[in-house]
Length: 89
Image (cartoon, rainbow, N blue to C red; front, side):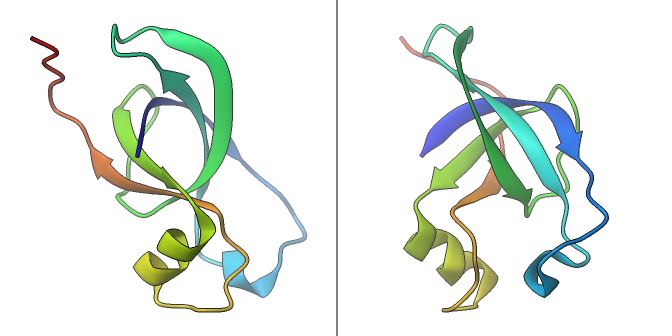
């Protein structure tokens, strides 16, 4: 699992049919201190998350395909949770 913050949305006019009616979001990866690491990924939004929200992302294709229940889906990263609080104590 990756901790991240939603920072943008991807819009496209031509998509694979798998991505019809699915949102793609740009997620900044976060360190345990809550600060961006400088890396990002693009993930399918499974939780109706929005800009600025801290989220949990699965970045492994087989697990992501299990979430969407499509064993042949062209997917790697998916947002599976919205984080309320991070405590590192």
